[in-house]
Amino acid sequence: MKEFSFRKKPIFTPEYDKNFFPVSLGNREYRKALEGKKTEEVIIALERENGLVSVFRTEVFKEGRRDDNLIYIERLLKTLLWLKGGSKVFFSGPGYLGEHLKNEYRHGGEREFDAVLMGKIYGFEFNVVITDRSGIPAENEGTRQIGGHLGGCRIGFDAGGSDRKVSAVVDGVAIYSEEVEWQPKLSEDPQYQYDGILDSMRTAASKMERVDAIGISAAGVYIDNEVRASSLFIKVPTGLFDARVRRIFFDIANEMGGIPFEIANDGDVTALAGAMSLNETGILGIAMGTSEAGGYVNKEGLITGWLNELAFVPLDYNAGAMVDEWAGDIGCGVKYLSQDGVIKLAENAGIEFREGLSPAGKLRIVQEMMDSGEIKAIRIFEGIGCYLGYAVAYYAEFYDIDHVLILGRVTSGPGGTLIVDKARLVLENEFPELSGKIKISMPDEKARRVGQSVAAASLPEIK
Image (cartoon, rainbow, N blue to C red):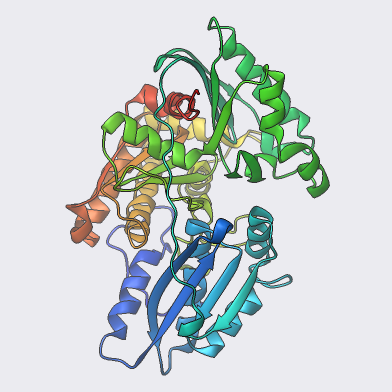
């Protein structure tokens, strides 16, 4: 990727990532430069399941700044795809921009990963349609109620990439919770994941007199309780994925005795946990663990049906940013607001980890250093806070946010407090118009560790 020209030095820069170039700042400078210039409208519409359509409008330079227009629009489409989802993109605007997107998001293009995965998620081959304003479909968003059902004996399960958490919940109270480390992202055989999930559920079931429902929070994309895409099964071959993974939770529920179940993306469950604990709406939940997950509860207390896959959303315009091994892209959230982000900064700081140590183990070492007050660890978690502050400002361009709630193993211990404090400073100094509107907070330590599984337990409605 070429370097975006509209670079402004951030007020706050991570100590161990001095080249960080926030997308939120770059876009703001780009839009400022448009003022008084000849511009051309760009309209992007994304069509997904059941005829749902999201529409986004922006402006680009009509004359000159061709490379900057290309970067701005490509990163914008990448953002919209992973925030909202879609298997068909309608583009109205300068022809060369449409052709660029068509070329990038195709088999053999730079963004082949995104195109293929969107097609896999929605069951249709992904394509970009170049049209004019009259060819842009009308916006058609959808919302639905999620969770909040607390009666009965329930299992709440949270499937993370480094650990799995389960709770036995009786009438809204967790009577038992446990957390087990595992490494599903390394297994080519989904039997490993199947056995681990089933073991956790059986353990929780043994703590209650009966099980009325199972609620599941998991990284990935889930439609009609089917697994459409998930990093938990990243090593599983395509054929085996279709045969064993797509309906894996149906198989597990049947093994448990045909118990009703509901599964939701872990980011949506994070937002649900916030809505339940804070009794508020307009909440963006960010789970910072093995990866970065996002979820959103709107002002009406409903979820939107958007993907909210923040791990793939660009946060950094730095052309030399770290590559995400799965997507083959740079500057995206997975390498910033996750344990990978902590490990990246730690290695930049000169911290050496024992060979063969798991990512969760590396994070734990940095957190132990933080517990001891070591300055490198302090700077690392402050750096994550910098990332978070600039990321929230970018997310606010697409979500109507009153509250950002962060969860996940990265926020455990005193490092979590540093992350929130630094993010608040970023908003206060760089985006004062947002600082007075958006609150950033964490739940207490216990809720941070097992809050996902407890909120997940409330997903199914017992009929």
